[in-house]
Length: 226
Ligand code: GLN
Image 1: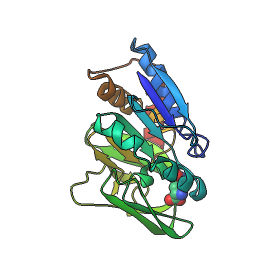
Image 2: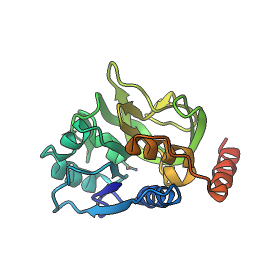
Image 3: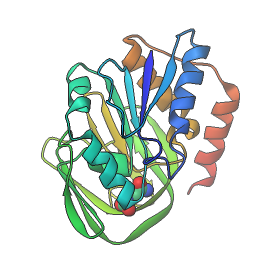
C-alpha cells in the first residue's frame, strides 16, 4: 500500500504528518505491506498512490502547496478511487475557493465547498460525532477560515465541542473516498477507528487492528474533551 504524504514541508505546521505514521504502523499490524512516501512541492505527485495525505498550514505555505497541486495530479488519483485525508489548510484547498492573506484564492475544486474568513480564529479542543463510524472523534482545531458546504456535499461529523466548519454545527466534508476535516491531533493517532476505515477503503477489504494502547488513549481523550 502506497501512502503519499503531500508537501509536509509546507503542510506540516500542526504535526499532521503523524497520520501517515499511524496508517503505516496499523497497516503493518494488519499484515499489509505499506510505505509512506514524502512528496515535496518541487516533486510531481505520483498517480499510483492508495492514500494521499494533506495537513494543516499557515496561509503562505497553504497557497504554495495549492499552486503546486493545481496541475491536476490529485484529480487523477481521485478519479482512480484513491483515498484522500485532508486536514484544515489541506481540507480548505480541496474546495472551490479559500481565503489566505485576506484574499480569495482558487482551490482545487475536488470538493463542492468554499472557505471564507470567519469572525474570529477558531482555536481549541474539538469533538465531533461521526455517523459513518458511529463514534465520537476528538482533536484540536486552529483556523481562521469558515467552510460552507455546497449542495450535495456531506459533512464529516456533527460538532459536539468546538467550531468545526465554523458555526459549531458540522465539521469537514466527505465525498466518495475524500475525507476533509479540521481535526488535528494527529486525528488518526487520537481516533484509531478512523485510521482503520481509511485502510479498509484503500485495501478494498475490512481492516480492523488490535492496538489496546491506542484504544485507551482515544478513550481518554474522548472523556476529557467536553
Ligand atoms: N491557514 C488556514 C486558516 O487559518 C488553515 C490553518 C490550519 O491549517 N490550521 O484557516
